[in-house]
Image (cartoon, rainbow, N blue to C red; front, side):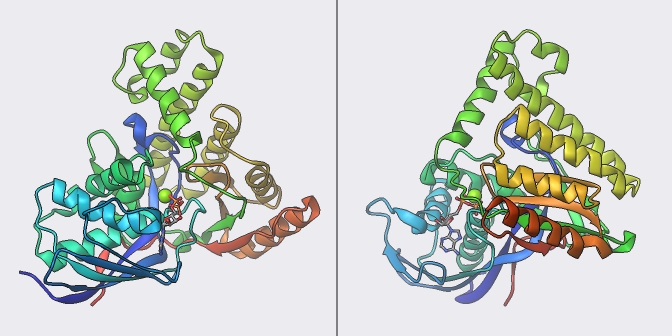
Length: 360
Ligand code: ADP
Ligand code: MG
């Protein structure tokens, strides 16, 4: 069945734990945010796409006869990848509105891709099972935008369920929806957007991914998912050793976190979050002073655990706190940022929300 018109939404995400593990065939544990990208779309009777965004205030029209650049590339990429997969993609007019902060490590790019994919699939009556959509959206970003991201963001934006985190095995794509009843335990996840500049399409992310692939090749394993800590002693290059150690220990931390969550022991995941941050800071070297400050101050102010989330080099920190302490922790971080002359951070509470769906 095809439809002519509708409204679709796909959320941003926050990753509870499991950073830079997705492209190593490893484990991740994101949940979807209430912040989301909404696409209002209507079908056109010709192979042409007109896209406008309230973020940029621009309208771009393309027909795939030439490459699309800038933000509209994220939309064109989805059209391209669907066509490559053999689908007859309907022309469409797409109006985009979003409250996912951009470039903050909350994955506004995946929210955009997944909302557009959901809209085009329904407008065209395309038979694309939900579980295949993350890989298509990831390919759109990899092949047509040029960002070598793993599959976590698009999986979270598509597959997450309200009140749950998504445990994803990025090799098998097996999923488990793990209950995350923060409010029921008197807890909250405070998100601190450091507002430190963050640019992922700028080489650092690709360099980390390349280091992980090189380490796996030297160890003779398909991906770092298959390496143990003992194996890593065979890496003579000290930098490569630390990069690989982050991934191997981070995968273990995701599994330890899952084990605690399955038993409802939410507070006890705090130290794993903090250890994840230390690993990103010291071994993977993807943090910046603002996010390190946010983590330190949140912990001093009573958080059970805190870590940067997202690709790194800025972006957001999440802190697990008693719900009644969230405001105090947020104030402490804001004061610490002021004392160090950083841009004021923004803060909000993250509620595990649903993945992509049609609104009307
Ligand atoms: P993140 O995914 O962490 O927010 P990225 O750099 O991966 O950061 O993606 C941000 C880019 O995605 C923006 O620079 C813009 O090109 C595009 N984008 C995301 N949301 C929108 C939107 N609502 N309208 C237009 N472009 C968007
Ligand atoms: Mg992104």
